[in-house]
Image (cartoon, rainbow, N blue to C red; front, side, top):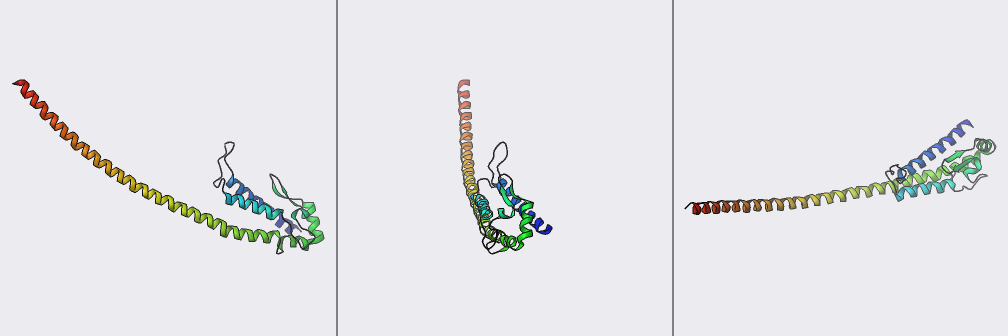
Length: 187
């Protein structure tokens, strides 16, 4: 029974760690804490909802139909927790139905495994593809803006060069006129 209890505790701690990570990644900024890197991401919120739904669901085919029947409960703010007395009583009196609760076609481990495969293969691949597309779009926008800036720079350089020529011409005319007046006033 010690190995089974250890396996249940490992299941609980890994589930709780994943839920904590997902919640931290999707958390909004508050109270001076920075927002998670996926704050507000609907895919992460959907993942949390789906995991909660699986864990709070029921399994048929045995004496036990939910995790709470074997002492695993979902405590707000804590996550899954194990009542060792209830759990040990369940595995000592009906080990096959405890195993059914996890490993049957409808079992929690089976459902979570199928969910994880689907989520990783579809949701995360889709998000990765969307991010790649966004990066390409941003890169294209940067390229277009650089072309536009180069064009504006070329135009400004041409305008500045023309202005310099006009100013040089005006300066030469001013010098000529100043010299002409100066000769006339000396005569």
